Length: 248
Image 1 (spheres, rainbow, N blue to C red):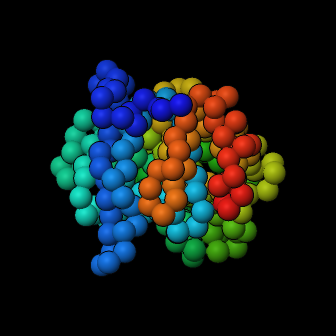
Image 2 (cartoon, one colour):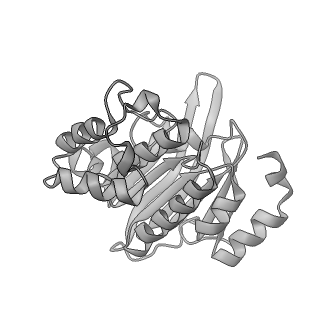
């Protein structure tokens, strides 16, 4: 099945369009990391980006959040070209990459207060407490980040990404280091986020996580989209039957 937005001749009403990517390409010297990626994402969608190591998944996210510039192609957030987007658009994005972007010498609460000031969160204390409860961090708010396990640090990074109530979450392998209970918490959190109109784009090696959350999935290999499907049944079918997933 071809997903809406994966062909140039299919355009949904712009009122729901969050992200529009056309012919996105990234090269480093002689090496092409991404080649002519087309992708459209609407509000409320959860999109899983799958593929083996080196497929271009993290590069795609880094391009979408403006950490690197494309070689060619276009990115639009909320109808605005990515070259024009600044604080107004960035404030709508919550990002968790491999680097958790936390000061290890500060406590969890101190880190979150810092980002709350950075984003101008008006009810910072209440917001931090609420996220602490939601992510099981209430008893850890006074602990230094360096003392936490990798899984707990990942939860703090998720709290940081959600702190300013973004419209979109971009998550690079968000289940890294999480135990089974924490993964269940993650799934429930992202389900609530999408049901309230939020949008999620996440890379993952975990087909189980993708199957639980994603209404759309794309599979990258050597910088190209190999397949793209929509609907929970189609996503589940491809996750179970595609031979390429054996390499993930």
